[in-house]
Image (cartoon, rainbow, N blue to C red; front, side, top):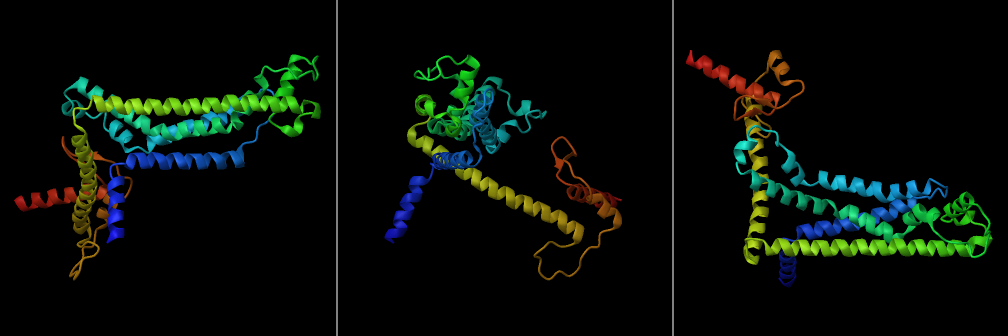
Length: 314
């Protein structure tokens, strides 16, 4: 009983914190993925003109991909964009100003969720420092502490570009190389921690402002969040059951029974024309101002019903 009570307390505590838990899991997976990605794939070219492109590509491209994936995996994104060109959209949203405010709010919410992974990637890679060191090594303004003071600018840049690869650095430049690496890691890690600080403060202030301007009290807001969550769960369950029952009607009409039926006394043998009617590629087909055919079988079943009704009227 005590163990069950403790489990119930934990479940009650975690309920309503799905977003926080999901963001934490995304951040942890991103950190692990970044470490594996760096270990197996990152290898600085240590060549003039290539270091910057290579380092920035490893910094920015994965972050951009994670951002796009974050948008794509959020159901709110597709809920926002699906059907926006529908002729019924104007009828359902008569208040344009309110609709624009709602769209901006939803976009901010979606963007906040989508930014978790790319910001984590950027912060971890900057704190690690390897990508930044590779990208910026040839642009460090540093003298070689008396070593080769008369080298040309191009030769100096070539030597700096080789600093991320210790095996390419001459022994007399080892101290200069260590100083450059330390300087670049310092800059990279400071930038990483500044990014984390800015993001944390921004998120905190955003939540504070949203709470200040909320028309609901704290407990009312918790009730509303619970209601929306439960409504979505029940709607998904009802959607699955309703679509299954609706599909059963059409399957029964085509075959004369549905899978799982007991004591099937007779079956229906579809004709060649009927097989042709339900075969092929299916697209949504608008049948009137309010309804669509969802599949070729759906379209066949409705036509069959209409033909039967017309035959009975005659």
